[in-house]
Length: 236
Image (cartoon, rainbow, N blue to C red; front, side):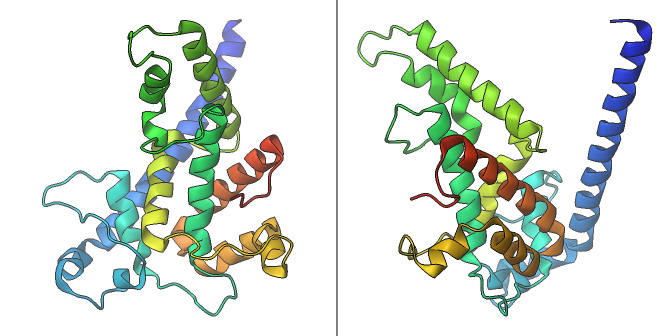
């Protein structure tokens, strides 16, 4: 690579880092704006956060301004229930993406209990190791590792970042839950729930404004996986 090419590549990388820094600054700003809500969320049952489904940890005194803590306070905007899409669809979309990633990497494994996105490398080692002899199948480990790496590279082109969006999806699922009743295949509701345009409008109407960008990115990743595994967007 010539010096000119190296300089151009560094400029592109620098621009990307600047955008990510601005995104992080907005997260910190939001956290600071909502710091006053901390004490109320500990004791008040009518705070804005109780409009959500599920429980989640609060920012500990002196705790770091990590992503999970930002997400906790990002929900000061109440959910708009006037839209026909059920809020649990937000959690379902996030849940489906997590499951589809795991199913793609570990395609030969039906049971994925205890598997989460952030422990995929450890799980790859685990499933590649014989439970009795302790012998590791290096070829199988490499095969799974390559599937994981290739998928992360593909999703990365859409803006997906494992360290950021794995906890984001977990929080969305814990906050909204997932669909209690699955629509009958072929029904009008099933068609709606598997229509990207409908889901985009649902996100724009229901998700808090500052979370919409990442929710739409999650949906984009799910659309990509749907074309890759040739299954409906919401596959059960």
